[in-house]
View 1 (cartoon, helix red, strand yellow):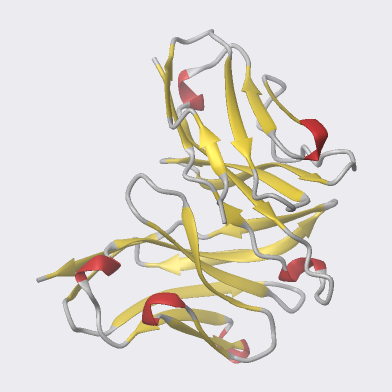
View 2 (view 1 turned 60 degrees about the vertical axis):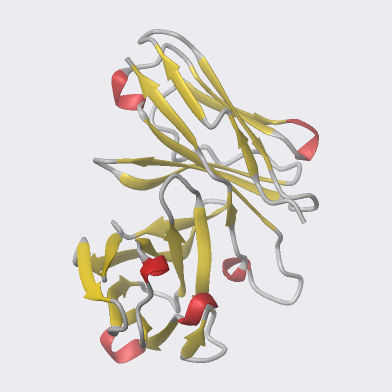
Length: 115
Length: 119
């Protein structure tokens, strides 16, 4: 079975500071990993995904993530936080369960950006 | 183009009543998923439809939950005899199987969800 763990249910950063949201995965096969963002009262929006083409993945809104197999990590970063980045972020791994290609999500990290 | 849409956006019901939640996937997407997002359980997979194949219902929490997909497009999730623990946000996602990639490289696009409150 595959799983993801997000360290830190709440992260606060100052506007302009580095954003680092942590995600570690567990997988017996090469994983396909995703980061989604959820703004209040909205659905999930894809930020970026890793599908083995490149270890450093660039996404929307200035976010990027680096796949590190040795550390089983896929941390999300952004050099400079903006107030509009305040949201909940979910790391997910794609797996096969029977015939379903389901996403298994981490528990989420709520990002607060302080002025 | 239009994204995944869900209706209603909010639903309040009384314990014991049945509810129906609707999902309109992105046009041309062959796969459709239902997930549940609740405070205690996070995001959970419920059910998956792919084309005309039999759905994978492995994530449905009880036999009170059922779903159907008509004409390979619109899907309805039905919860019978609702319980308070069914209160959650129900999210629908659709995807297109990339012809050049493997099955795990698909990207799921999510709707805004239906917030269900069972009193």
